[in-house]
View 1 (cartoon, rainbow, N blue to C red):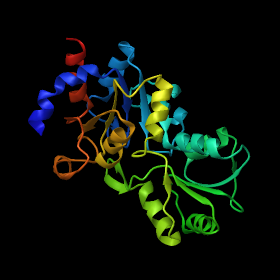
View 2: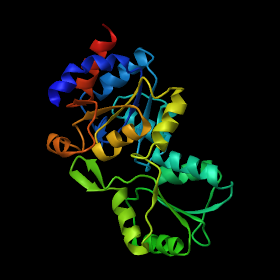
View 3: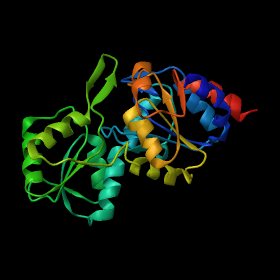
Length: 274
């Protein structure tokens, strides 16, 4: 399989738009990963359309811009798309402005919901939206569980069970969703990867089509499966969650595999500039 991918490297030259995950791809916690700055600099210099699309809903686009700037990576808010934003945009299609929503999450999710005109409330809510919350409490779970049992639609921004940090893997939003599903017997409607909604919105922002678009990510079960569900090319980097052992055993095989985005850039640039 590795040899097949190596023989297919020339296919990299057909990639003209990138959807790039962030956690485990550009950084781990506050640590910039190898090649991240070089990749983003190259994309800007060559005017390559790209969107940084993350399943992590904790931060606002403005906060992500500041976080990346602290790592000497410059992007604009328009180049950021979070699962929190995608969840709010989904709700805007099925619910009218002013609808009450109970949300578990952090700044990014709350800001996205308010931007779409939703009212954050704790009682008589027709929707419960759950994103990553590092201040999660039993009380928050109690309110959400009661609302879901009363008939509220249960929405999860993303299913990632873990989050890569400098210390190692810590619980992700999928762990919170699992707790609520266990308490309510109701599975969540997932908006982020591996569902195609987030990636479709990213392509809309770029004005891109499936042909010529690739996702670069570190998770087989979200980024790579999500790319396949959205019909785009898939690039796995081994700088985050998924390792080679998991890769060999996974049913979700990427089109290309690299150690990090620096290695991807090297091969992709060679094919683009031939």
